Amino acid sequence: MIIIKTIVRATDTTGARLCECIKILRSKYYNGKLTDYIIIAVKTALTNRKIKRHEVYKGIVVRIKKKTMRFHGGKITFEDNGIVLFNKRNEIFASRVLGPVCTELRKEKIVKILTMSGVII
Amino acid sequence: MRILDCSMCGAPMYPGHGSTFVRNDAKVFRYCSKKCRKLFVRKVNPRRLRYSKAYRRTHNKELSMDTTFDFEKVRNRPPKYDRELYASTIAAIKRVNSIQYKRQRSFYFNRMRSSMKIRKMAVQREIKTNLSLAINPVAVPKLLADKIRMNSNSILTQELKLQAGTTNSVVVRRDQPEGSDSDEDSDVEVE
Image (cartoon, rainbow over all chains, first blue to last red):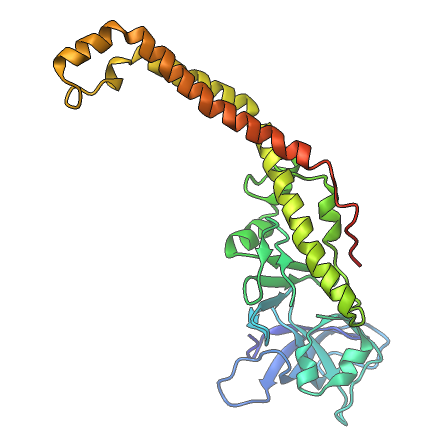
């Protein structure tokens, strides 16, 4: 459940660490779920990388803390709220994705993240 | 579809039941219930939980080390369809299950042997002390009851005989599966 002002973690090699959700690209009072696009502001970042603090990017939700139903009938939770960042040209920014990634991305046809990540759950 | 085990208590989780938790190092934990999940959050060791499978196996409450458990494996590669293999595996599953059931029963009776003795002694003691309760005054006429009371020793011996008869049959049943188990699943092979 991601709303405005929630802190999410960037799980890729861009250099961004903690980000703040500014907007969810859905209807007005919508709580962000898996495979939702959101807009974030970078709060903390590693030095000497492309991304710096206070910059605004687009991202996709890849992991979520909230218990969600799956298509087979089970429920799944992750340890944190993780996102993958997008470019200004709507391309995936990083070259690698860290940590586990949900399979629901395949249904949304965002297969590139799945190929970059190590573990799909 | 797979029937997975709960990572806390070890109970089987059928599809559509339970919840999964994924740690950030990609380790997957499955819980059959909310109870199990909360215990995991509290970092309770499943070996100290009374109802968990791990506890019962470590404390010799259940059959733990057995060859029948080796058939249960996670196979990630599905084999090619073969009619003979398909038929043979189904036959083998039934055979292995029956053997496992027998062994579990024999294990249980061996575990309960000492307590069965104590229970038998208690029954005998009860009959000796409360023989008057065994004679129903409504069902038996008064004169007959007096006669029976006179020959109370004969009734005691009869009761004890009956008790011994029932217990002896149990003993026979206990011994039989151990002997019949000796011919093992040497002819069964599962891929």
